[in-house]
Image: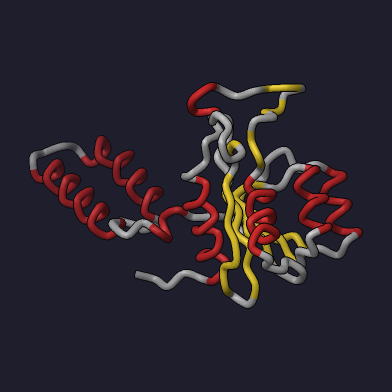
Length: 189
């Protein structure tokens, strides 16, 4: 298995945190990092003691669910709760932050933000990051990098394709499947 970069590692952590999300509209995860060490993490979900969107549905006001606390805010609040400074830290988040989260990120002293997916990137948020000298880095996330069964899955698909080939399936019928396997695993067959 190929060793992943630090950026991929922390982005993977954010994607893992997103799996804890209780929002039915979008799962987001965020990881606060200093000196290549995770100091906090968060995902979007309801405040402690409130109903979750997955239980009661979203509470939408002006096209925004007001029931949830965003992942970035939860990570920053975790730092505040336990007295962990955020000044000069980096933030890895699965999606580009909304405008209110952008303001909190800047006020918390985050030095650099890494995000995996563009999501309603607000021009004013981008402008604020620039004015505050917060470096914004797009880090595309490739789930294949953290699929520990990738080699086994690829071997299974190749065995199946070889069986189909051996049973007489024409090459032109196999081609779309071979192409899809190559796309999924990033390897040519």
